[in-house]
Image 1 (cartoon, one colour):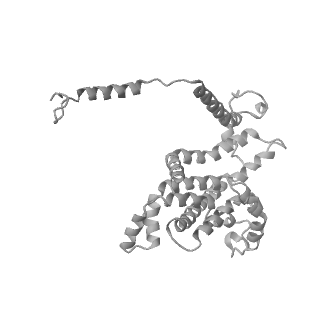
Image 2: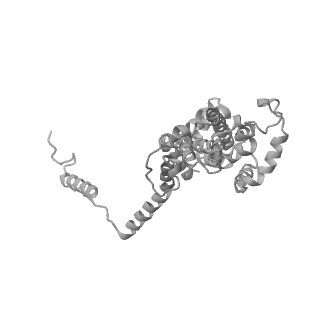
Image 3: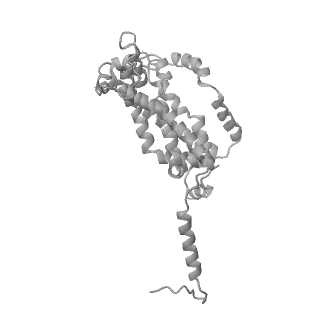
Length: 314
């Protein structure tokens, strides 16, 4: 059926349709104006991109060099030593260190997400006396450097009984100091989740209460499913923090079979008679860093969505 451009009221609309279509096409075909300011912004961003990605290229280049070629100025190795990625794991307890790191990371992620979501739910959805004051005190702990509490925490963990956990009488030289604190929540993650949960309509909680649901059921069945984006964001943060933690395992782990990957990388420092084995170190570092890159790329959409919505809501 051919369109006549006349609506039921009898007025001609063909001109409006043509004008709107033409306007839309003109907007699509409008070229991007390359102003000096836009060129300057592009130049700065391109320079920063090159600056930030150069260390990664250096790591890849160094990981493919022979020991004789380490101190050269060539970015493209000649010859290319692919065997560095095999030789780098030829000594040391790498299989055990991978397992230790995975165990600590998984437990820490679970503890952080569980405890932070519970505390954030209390601050965001429950009404109790002194809530805002306690929340400000929690945020104030973010201003306290971790190095300040390092010695008191070590003394505490060195005196706490482990009840034979992993054959130790105290928490030192066990995974407990690296996993149990994750179940005490994190101030930054509490803030992110609280901001997100405050944006969830209260009508959902009220309807659930009318149906007889308690606060625990509301938190589990309503709030957590609607907070997947924010939970994904803090999960990535927690994974990265636990996987790349160096100071904690260095202080609390004393047995080699309990080391993590980050501690294992130290063995390349004097691998060649006092000279660091930079090629093996870079090869191992790239493989150790690979899980972090994979997790971020797989969940990048949820990560960006969680951070963005958390900043806008509340």
